[in-house]
Image (cartoon, rainbow, N blue to C red; front, side, top):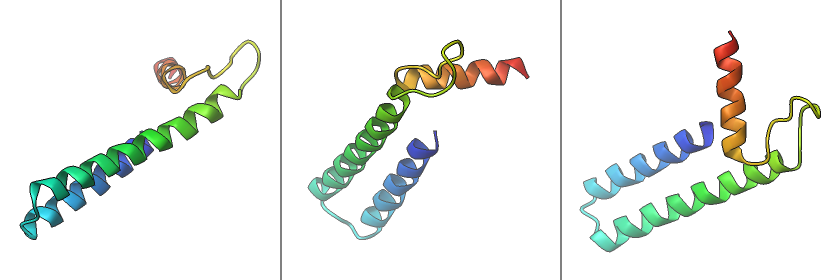
Length: 79
């Protein structure tokens, strides 16, 4: 969630600054598309790391980032 929050803050800052500068709609779309592409790339990198493994054979983290989130939620519910 840190990556998604980070890129969300970047998008919001760019959006507000472009609104303040009265930028064109196409420039705003380009900034949003670039931020979305960067988010997808970062999630893909994390997904590759998760897929490569971690944890024990009994308590594996998962094969995708969604499995990692479910493992995290299960750990939170144990507490």
